[in-house]
Image (cartoon, rainbow, N blue to C red; front, side):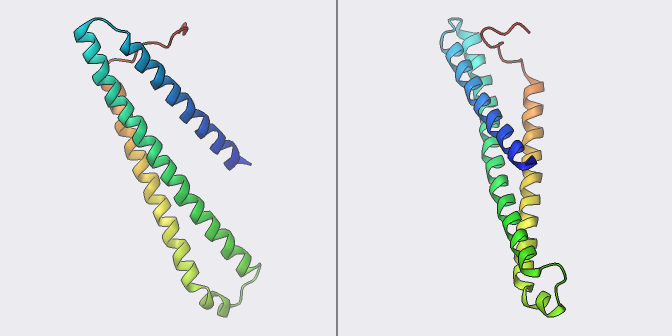
Length: 137
């Protein structure tokens, strides 16, 4: 149940992010001041690229983690509650594959964390995007 909720939250964040950038792009296109318009476009492009990188890497991480979990579940079913040593030897190639998949997912999580830190640094380094239309905060 937790994974379903986490997946739903991630998808909702992705959709809200896309809507936010779409709205921001529309606001920029309506700006008339040349220098501030160019600065806003540059800032938009920088942050939108970070957002796209986060989306791409998080989707890849979900795929890698799903593959790892599926392999793990398969092994668990094959091994049963008390596997014999001969069964472990027989399943050694599958065990190795699942371990590799787990390391791939772990590396993906590390890449995503690096991308998130870079995005955070970019957000903190520049001016904030304009408030969304209708926001009171």
